[in-house]
Image 1 (spheres, rainbow, N blue to C red):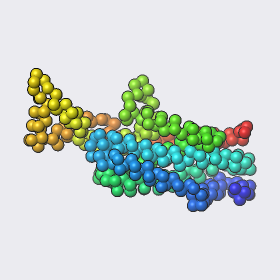
Image 2 (image 1 turned 30 degrees about the horizontal axis):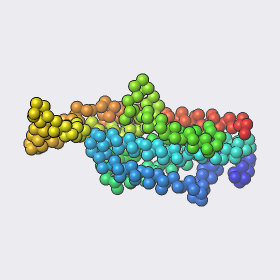
Image 3 (image 1 turned 45 degrees about the vertical axis):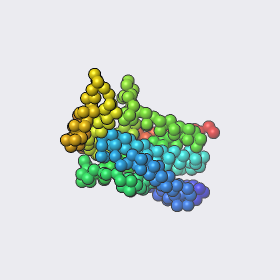
Image 4 (image 1 turned 180 degrees about the horizontal axis):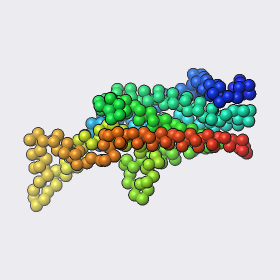
Length: 316
């Protein structure tokens, strides 16, 4: 770290300092343990996609569950990438800031480096999804290919979670505090995404979660509203033997549907009656979701810079 401090004392330009710190982070990726986030992220993505991937973008239920799980993988990867990167070297940052380091250069170097990690994780996730048999939509909503739209969304979600964790790492003073905060952030993303839990009066909170925008965006790109719904059929099958006045009307209807080859038509009809406006495959749904995530990234970055500039007041 002495080399970095000496160079900064001689060169105080923000651009030069940006290059110094970016080289430092790249060296840490090569020679230290930072690259471990890639295989860990790959294992998590594999576990999730091999469980829920076969029905994702095939049925409405599979798409809802699969995209939410995939979004959670992205959020976890992003958090794990940077939750400790600043607080673990807080003393060094404090000394170098007093020696002339620009916090904006330091944070921007982190952001560029973390973007590189998130991009690699996105490629790995897409590869694992393909191997797991995920049927990505062929036509895209914004670009010409659905897998590209999905890739952009996965990258944005991962990077937003990454920068949120970077912000937390700038606020807290120890790695222990950072790792204590992270589970609460994950729980908040899971509970308040609005995907599986009725939020009631707290429904307005879902727009503050990365997971909400990521799930909605992937469902829209995955053409949720065009897919069949199987939940209604499965529910009816569970009650097929229910008797009414000694008769089994549901069993008769279900057998009639199957014998006449109308099952696919029934599933399609169920899906058409379960469409959601937020999942319509239109740019009006996808672009605002991307914009919301980008806005979050900007807010997290601003808070990170402002907070870390107060490091000289650290009383430790």
